Length: 138
Image 1 (cartoon, rainbow, N blue to C red):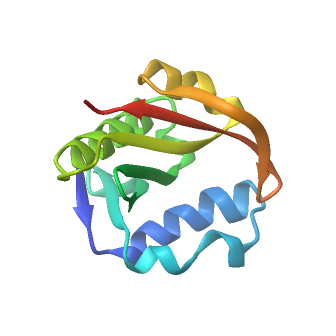
Image 2 (cartoon, helix red, strand yellow):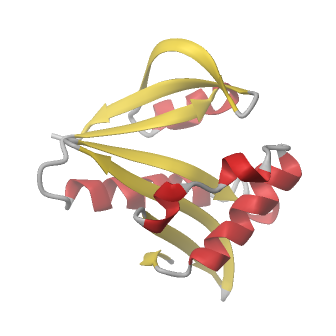
């Protein structure tokens, strides 16, 4: 089940495990001021929190980020379910017409299967290669 949550502590525990411990993102880069105002999604399966994502709004664009799935749930479709849930949330937000995300380059194919298209050059975020991707919500 994926729902909006105010349980930032659980979301952060998942993000710290995936981004800081596994991908070696500096902890000070992982958490930012946007966490306090973002919409957070939490994926819970059989009572266990296994994934999270956050949504920010910038005018008519909703930005999906900090998508993290714990290792034991990867390959189960949970990541795709998180993105679909974020898109449902954005489509229900008045005035939002576009979804955007910064994809780690190895995950571009994953996001393309969900309808996103890459644009712009590759760049480093926390030392990890990324490309921006977008999807029109209309």
